[in-house]
Length: 515
Image 1: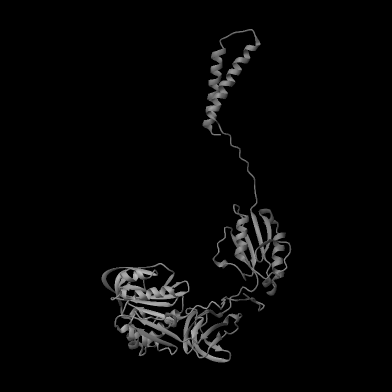
Image 2: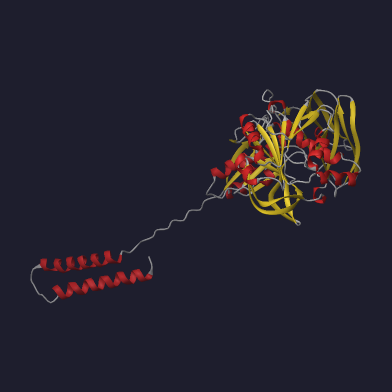
């Protein structure tokens, strides 16, 4: 209660006394009962004034509480494998016997493996370790309290998020047990490869190798199929150049599922050699693909398309300019529509009746008003102005592996200027670039619509791309490989009969592989 409130209460008592005195004080009486009336008047007036003041009385109680200290011990099998069980148990016993700690803290003991558990006894036989889940449970138990954690662990986690990037609400003090020395290591971190390829084709492989060490080393990367060596090359690694992205091509000479093993040579005295090898699988298919090209105009792009696609022995291109014929789309794996106009009306109606994959290429002869109405995949708000569009590779494209053939140096394609929008799921392979300014509009994009795959290239004169790669590399191979991978993706039929499971295996210290 504040001093001001106390003064007001005293003033109220004075006012009540004065009121009682002026009403009853001047009267004289021999009866003793007359003294009760002024007292009652005083109490009545004082109580009324006290209610008007409404004073509040605050009571404070102070209690000395000890903060909680959580001792959490790793109960997983890796502790026993590293022969650190006695050390963990010894640490807990020393904490329990420490008088100063027990006076300052309310010590709680827990064990953890797949989660947090009250500590009864440590067996060191649990197969799972989830450190992040354990710390999250502690945060929930002591949400509004100060409860620091002493975490006794070897740091080997088999499940859950990476604890290196987890921030706990409680202060965590880690006691590392086991071998805490840092050893040099080299490993294959990831392999990117297309799951399917065609017979007599060369398929790309992308391998990521990571080195964790200080001394410069030179190690050999090999690819084997059973006992046959398919690829071998040496690479240098150092503390500064500690990772490499290695790209190469392997031949597909026979039909079937082929198993490959990628391996990097081990370091001297390397502790973990399991991650030096990684297998991968590629299925080789014998598919004779027929591609139909429809166009009402003559253009160098059409000849380029035929020559580039037919560099692959398993593909044949048919060019058709008579669009009113009864075309059997089911006989083709892919239909390429070059610069559609209103003459393509019958073609689009037939395409709606089946699930044939198609590839649309637009340009200066395209009737955009018709094209926007003929299909519901994409649209373009064009104006009657042409624009030159250079290409910028989208490195995040993940439908299949794409190699940069020098897109930034290729001549621009020509098309109507305008914004492009898609109404179905799509992925941009190449972005439009106008006068060295990158845009978010697609130049080349692929899309999926139920059982159908498709693509659209917003620009003509791609024949110049093929010619320039020939000049730069003395071969059409780079462009033809890029273009044929797109054709392979578009002409491939989805395989509903096969179940494919991809996973990164975790190999436990005793050699057991856990999926």
